Length: 77
Image (cartoon, rainbow, N blue to C red; front, side, top):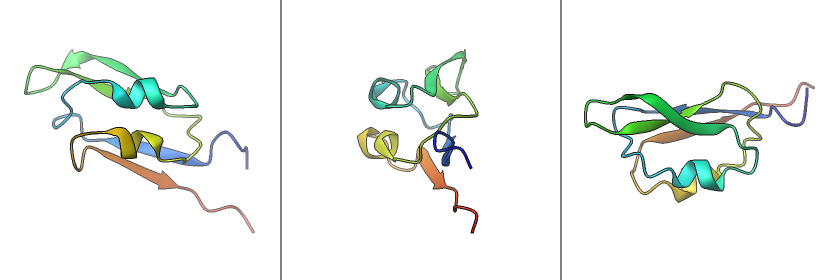
């Protein structure tokens, strides 16, 4: 398994306030600001779909509880 694809990020875009702290803090640079507005009128953060390291930094810097979930993949044995 590639070391640069150890995780996966799920963002509840309907709850995101578009502060982009997660985007700025992501060491793998796999998060960005989306184009569409969510139901609150914010452009939510989006995951590119690959390259997540599973570090969880985005989860820890997000000020909104429950918006970001990081799922770490188990290494193949």
